[in-house]
Amino acid sequence: MKRLLIIILWGLWHAAIVSAGETKMPVLRIYFQGAITPNMEYANGSMRLTDTDGAVVELPAKFRTRGATAKQYLMKPALNMKLRTADYTEEQDSALLGMRSCSSWILDAMAIDRICMRNRVAFDIWNEFSRLPYATDYDGRNGTEGRFVELYINDKYYGIYCLSDRINRKLLNLKKAQEQEDKTIRVRGVLYKCGTNDIDNQNEPCYNEDSSACVVEWHNAWELSYPEELGGKATWEPLQDAILNGHSSEYVKKYFFLENLADYQILIMTLAIEDNWGNKNHFFSIRNINKDINDPDPTESDRRRFVMTPWDLDTSLGGRYDGSYYDGNYTEWVIEDKVKNALYPISFVINDEEYLAILKRRWIEGRKGAFSIRSVNKKLEAYRDLFLESGAWQRMVDHFEAQVSKPCYVQDLAKEIECIEAWYTKRFQEVDNYFGITNGIAAPATLHTEGAIYDLQGRRLQKLPTQRGLYIRNGRIITPSQIHNSQFIF
Image (cartoon, rainbow, N blue to C red):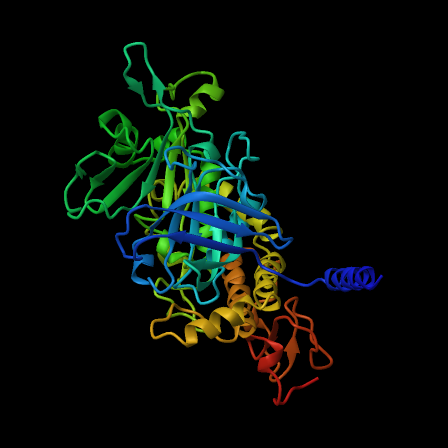
């Protein structure tokens, strides 16, 4: 009887906790032998992932460090994780935390991002806003999907990570390389990643030893993400032809999807992702390089066209590659100045009337949806609440405060999110101004009554704001925490 009573009381307590909405974060524990080094090769080990409902996935896996900049922050190392069979010889797919089933995963440390969510928020915005120009098994998704976890490596705590899938052949529905009757392999789908450290001297066009990386022209280097082991002239030729010879709006219109390019430009401009506006941090893919671009059937010719996919968005929302922009100090990237030096192939359609019309239309659509201030703030605040209410943020801060070497983070996450929201409100207006849109939020500079407070629609408040949000005073975006103990006019 006593035992039954205890069980009943425990059940009632557990139900109360669940109904109260206790916030948890999944925990991932990984194990492997050897030291974590910048050039660490794949080490065999295992992973144990415990979801918030207590469900456990335990699998053999192997791990290595990843990322050029990330390798400088080994106190919180970024890792690739590949799930394997018991003898480590075969790939093993698994649908971790409800994401698509695959064998290759990223453990993103976000060591230079002081809020540990910029890359994820930017990809969430991108996935909501843009889709591939063709159907796939994943609803046309053209970016990564991720879930936040707390990571332990060999039972040592390392803080908040983002477990995410990869941009790969399956996600983009690229055709697999095909064996011919003569046993040769015919390359069909290709995936090129802009930027590589696999070639030291990038002053002249060249390949690395196995042709898995290529310098197309001076300091314009690429990696072959698929098929990585089948580099060669035929595999690289479509990319080389585009970059070296595709110097006209006519070429770009023929070989690229204009709406895909416009979406990419909107993403980079609006979130001010300076680190992705050049020869790095994006993918080009072609579903089948053997298709005829001049085929009269657009279904066939479209298979030969390039698709652009973003990558590594951790300098978004005003951030910087070394984490030095925070606490109200964010990028002041001027849209007009940067667009003049647009990256290929956008640089060749940046003044084309058809492209510009698509670009403006896509912003008008995006500003009401994925890029709206409300939508962006909602994403930031949802992750903020997850980090704070689960206790994960404080655990991570406490851990690294006790360490000699530290990644980039802020003590007061809520305050930092408020500052970023204020920055984005200003940025949103700048993008509106760039496109000549005047029916958005009131421009701060137009609200001149000294000391008065306005909401973002330009309506003058009659009392001090009591709710979280962004407001305007003396032409500046402010938060409630910034307006206490000040004098106002009502």
